Image (tube, rainbow over all chains, first blue to last red):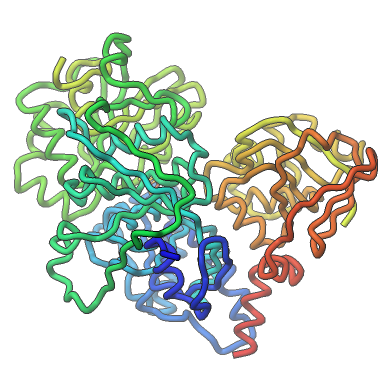
Length: 423
Length: 165
Ligand code: SF4
């Protein structure tokens, strides 16, 4: 019987060489990650485990700590959390601790720094760790206890997931991006449509998709309940990794006779840009319908681990051009990392955003989780390129969040209501 | 394991309903337990105490939303010894096991009602509804997960491995 890419990677990270989907394994993890919200709890777990032994972290070069959520520290409580990351990092000589000013949104930063590679098992105490499946790694979000244990043992337990294969075919319509494909997918299968499952994204559309769009798709696997999103590596992946020696990573592919729980095919020529309505990512509608509703907005956010990459800023900059941000709204642009920020400066996007009347922030999660840098008041509506539009996610419990791609967000920022660059 | 049921016929009971974010500034389990489920049902504590309920039964996708581990901690601290639902959000599932809170995937929740007394045998994978005299298969919990629960959670499990090394 053939195996999926997810089964193969996990099997190769455990002693059980016959393990298949459904089996529970204790896997060796290649890297583990925590942030300013989740890592502090993991440190307590870690301390409890090693208490009374002479043990330390399993490998100081395989732990990554990114203070990115409430940073630059928004208040005293968040400063205390960030300090815990710093103190732990210096105490245990953690190699990949990113101080503010060098940190970025973790799921933009880690692939950029090549801290995750094809074929690896990567865990993060953050649900969007599934982003790195775009590189052909098994990558998933876990709890703080899992991270604490991984920092001590270098291991994590998993039930090897069954896979659902998604096949995307046909020609993409104008302005349709990875974000639209994943929103469309979640709209079709629902927020629990892939619970516990691996979501394997394939098809000629995926094969042509840029890495930035692939990251966006895998990022939102968790929004369908998925354990991981994964895209088998190809030349686009290899090109992204051109500075990494090829013997440093391992490329896996699903067998032709691999067993899938389900195979779902989408004809993308029928997919329009999508908007997810409050308060679930599955509440999607095509832009033609949304445009007619003339939904006025108070805030636009372009950024996050879903859409804070250079390509995202580029599309937004091209659409905004010499236009001004609509006088009735705030537009907040957040590059995902310092490198993306610098590139955007070099290419003139940042100047363009500022001239248009947008706010540009240092990399941070900020408004995505209602942390800071753009909190909504009661009855305000935001259109955001982030990944969650749960009740109260971006501020007041009576505010509303709509989700879209950067193209739709930028066009709407100019017009003042949710629309497409084409209208 | 034996216990009395408190049932919520609701899908997608998310971690914000289990323990609202406003209480996360203090991670003391006792404090979390006091506010457990309060946004879902203001009378949760009273109902639970009146019935002496220790088992929660709910509809699918229990524990969706954030990866906050405080959710299963709050339930455990509130005296809940087991949760039964057709499905769980996956990180909630992990977190529950990791802190030693048993959790059962069971589709036929219509066969269980508030006030029923259940007897659950994890080793044979059976569940007895003593109140309406019916018996169900619940499937055996994988050995590995049973082991984590019986030792009191993943921290103790990891500690054992470290000490054995
Ligand atoms: S940008 Fe948003 S979704 Fe991504 S890691 Fe930060 S808070 Fe989480």
